[in-house]
Length: 309
Ligand code: PMV
Image 1 (cartoon, rainbow, N blue to C red):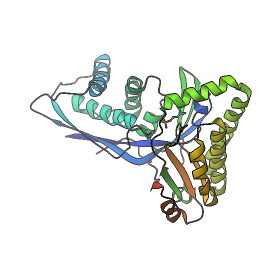
Image 2 (cartoon, rainbow, N blue to C red):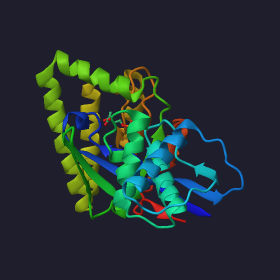
Image 3 (cartoon, helix red, strand yellow):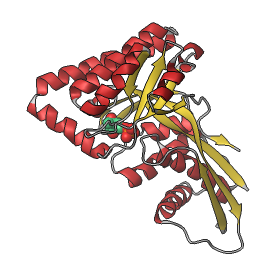
Image 4 (cartoon, rainbow, N blue to C red):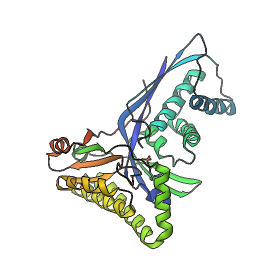
């Protein structure tokens, strides 16, 4: 039996602006997907997604003339990463499955770089034009600073420091529900706002870039106040972009009295805006979230990325 597990991710800063060449800061989180492969006597019927994953792996093994044996197997997948909620569940599936299949067929273990490249190919099949941050965060773990310079040049850097405990211990992930709009619809919405008013929206993107860099500095210096400031600034800018529904924007405002917050991901126009990061500076956060009827979980980060079990 061969088993690998890979984490999901959240965007700490830079969503939307990242589509226009600004940086984004992404972190792997401690929600994981596990893939197990065990030899089987009979061939199992595979889903189209799985067939795609398999074909990327075979194509690689063939092209590199790596010795491998085709064997029947049974797949077992377990996950606590919410599906379709911007937490990178498909990327974690791609990363863990590639690692499993490569080892199952060839009997060898491969470098994370290679697993990540193949997982990116699979993500392209799942999503069309993914940035590559989800699979990179899942494969390498930790913090990823990402910037698209050109369509053919995406700079994906793993930062060699982590979110300090004084920040992590105060972070919560609040669930406002699944937005009615897809990520693509939200990206198109921002695109149309940019067309209508290029100078205003470009200025917002520049300020988001500043907030993202401020957040990196805050993490490096373990500066809680600066982190809170960067987070709230980012939320204000996302509201100015129009990706936080009026209703949710009103409802979330109370959190500012306790610390700072921002949406993470594409946002929403009607009501739900997906997950919200909340930094509790007051120590009263949990009680308050409960009283306000929010659904939430503690946010913990992952440093390991892909792991062989
Ligand atoms: O939460 P997600 O992974 O759906 O993130 C969307 C982030 C956007 O910047 C809005 C779009 C993108 O492709 O980067």
